[in-house]
Length: 283
Length: 283
Image 1: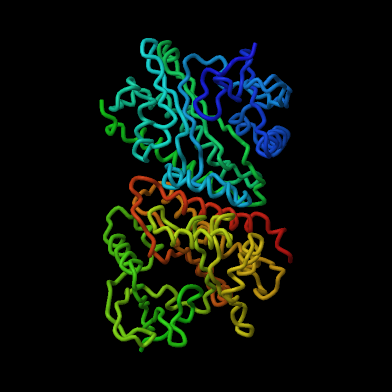
Image 2 (image 1 turned 90 degrees about the horizontal axis):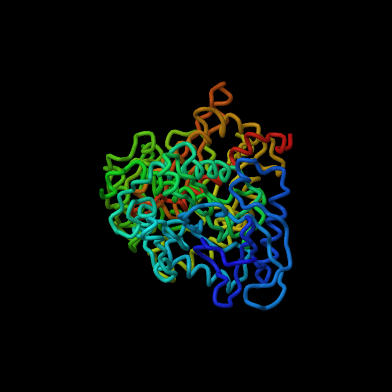
């Protein structure tokens, strides 16, 4: 009944006997609790968030729905393990393109242990996190029924430069996702428009300018869209922004999450530029 | 003819035979070039900025006017030294209150030398920079002709917590700047209004959401206002936001300054809260 998710682009994967999330094929996503305090921290966040009356509805929709925890046979054969029961975000989507973007120039909380900070700071400096305020953690972009998905490997994604990230954001919304000369053919319908990605990111930004409840470290924004089906049917393509990975969420204590907000604004600027300077997309 | 500035609240001071900036009493401020690349870097910034046609006028006004460099007898008696000739920001002001706020959770540039980064990171973590996105570097707040200025010492300012910073921002606009129970009597006229501090910070924010020319590390926002004179005359008090200290400005290379922007948004949130929740100011 349980299987490995089809459209996971980053993080631990339940492949080859490893521990990772599973889906049930009916809309639920089972994420194993990480053994240390990260697992319990993420459960705490979901529990707090899903019962917090101060979260506006138009913001709650950016987060996966949470259905508690459940003991489940772990994907690595280690026996029954606690899993978070979450909404399967790509359930019902046809060939979704997905980008996993880790937000913030700093992925570590002030109060984290010293050795953990050191490890994170190194990764932040070696990736685009410090320079750009975010980094691409993984992606799959759908080309066509014939070509399938463009899904760069972990090592490739890890070594991307700022210019690469800009290019990859363009390639994902281009006709030929495999080519290095993006035409951004789908940019205006996916990134633009009143229900597009940019508009959703701006809603999120407005909330982050104000909210002082949570600080999100090492949290990712998923940009998800499906182009083929909808565009063929003459519809506006389905495009959604979601937030995932809350193992390092801490109390905001009356201060805004300036680290997340800064990175989000940087991402918004990149997406805006793709929309406003289409001439820089090679046709 | 040259003298030590009256209203400098942070940075190296030209006192007791030390090297520091001087003023001429006619509106000019002479800042000695720091010996290493910081001095030349700051001159480069001023030169580039003051001739950059892409800087909107309403943004240029936040920066001190630059009048080139000049050889001058240094304040430490070390002979003729190159100085930047800048606008004396408090020239003509009567008993100005001044807050020097170093913006950004990170005061070091990605490309800075390793030992410099280490030093900065330590200071950023020990101060409110990492947690709050900015830190108070110094301040003077005018009480009255009788009491004079409240000007906390360097050590006191260095050890401020997030809650202290919030309190200090309130005390500066209170009737009794020396008391620990602020009434925020001047908050609405200094921080609020269409020409007040908040409104100026929001203009700056809009520019930082868009500009990718410069990244400002270890740069300070000065919040300056004069309450007594103007309020007595029934006028809106003079209140100005200025940016200073550009020894660590680097090219933005097409990326917004998410580090500065995040800190600025955090400051904006604090100032907004003082305006919207006056009940939290003890009367």
